[in-house]
Image (cartoon, rainbow, N blue to C red):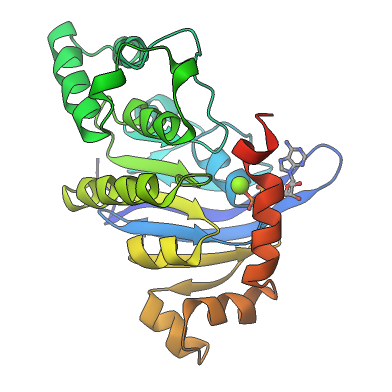
Length: 265
Ligand SMILES: Nc1ncnc2c1ncn2[C@@H]1O[C@H](COP(=O)(O)OP(=O)(O)O)[C@@H](O)[C@H]1O
Ligand SMILES: [Mg+2]
């Protein structure tokens, strides 16, 4: 299927939740095939809502979404076969092991048994969970859970990977591990779309960044383009100028919103 070089195409996307919150207010962007694209923005900007609409977990109010040339309204199954996602709220089955969950996911995607086995071996190695593969997920740390969630999203070798705040709540070592895996996957051709509120994460990983605030994209470009456009020396300065939200604010928000601090919702 042709996708004219843009594997994700989003036009005038909007979401108004029941109750009236306008979480996403007219968002338009494209992601090129093979690109590492990031949505950066303060808490409440609408990043999760946007991502959830892209993978059809949240029904949009209006707008169009095309992935790899397929329309999300009419050809959702074609899209599901091509995407993987690891979302902000991880819902792992505590009474299953990593290996069991990976097996289940492989079968859900109708992969042949031998292929599932092969993929499981490869993924457990990739996310460094080989040693604990047969332990219950209830015994895993936050970092191990995120890495398992990432492995689950990769079982069917998706063309496009969606990740919502993939390193939230992780220690620096676990964070570095995930960054390295994501870079490798992207180098091998996988398109990655992630959201983050960490400047350093956006800067370290993304070819192109869209900064989101109050339901809209306030600026977009490569880091050098953003620095030039906003006459700034750092991405943090761009963030400050375009969102009016400071890093210090974010740290306060982060503590309050971190699922591992807050307890799972
Ligand atoms: N299920 C929901 N129902 C109502 N309002 C929601 C829901 N989810 C998010 N919101 C609101 O939508 C806005 C955007 O939230 P969200 O997309 O989670 O932003 P972000 O991921 O950038 O922190 C916030 O004001 C949030 O409170
Ligand atoms: Mg979010």
